[in-house]
Image 1 (cartoon, rainbow, N blue to C red):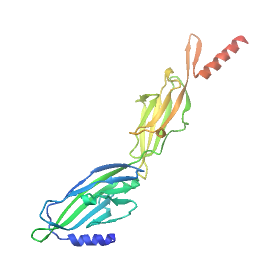
Image 2 (image 1 turned 135 degrees about the vertical axis):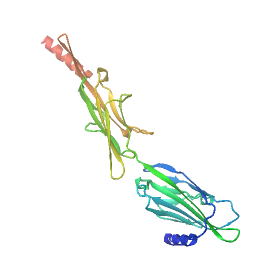
Image 3 (image 1 turned 120 degrees about the vertical axis):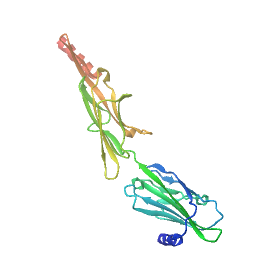
Image 4 (image 1 turned 180 degrees about the vertical axis):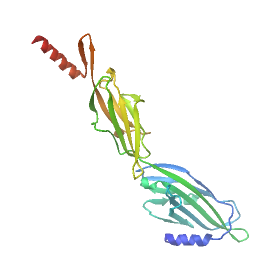
Length: 284
């Protein structure tokens, strides 16, 4: 039976019927999913009132409403007297627990467009003891929030693990970007295993598709002990992965002038060449 026919039938069945004791519906209320999930289940279970009445007809409906405009929605699945009709069957399905009063909705291949409010609506026509039809109904909603991990993380204008030369007491200025995440990504900076808490500024930019790009700016003044240390920009999540991290290495050149002498602190290679140069100057 076509979806339009089912809708017309449901309107004819329920129009003008007296209201009885309402059906009780239980749903998730709030549900989270991530882009790329094979399937997410929106739970719906109803309990019929205990009456001395015979079920004449049943009608269950799932409706999807955009969170930005709750006045506009469209039906994605209906069940009339146990017969299921689904809009976009490759996207939506009704669970096999329909006989247990659980017309839960399955959404396949989750993407950002699936974020919405989903209404489970249940209607029953009962034949009461005196033979008159009675309508019992209830409606409950589940808000589905779809999250998306970032596409990638990078420190701008720096290669991965690139050496950044800087004088002691000078400043290192770094910018890290986390692209296309939802919600906006938390960014943390570390030097080796120590989290950096100061001199960090973050901005976020929202894209048309609802994802966010986060920019984090770090100003860091290294000490002599920071030579060869690693500065990392990390997208912090419950399940961090290497691809959500970028890093650079500090190559420190520090000059201390004391008693007319100049001493150079740098990488081991620089120290070797400096020592060799001074040796040649002394013996030539």
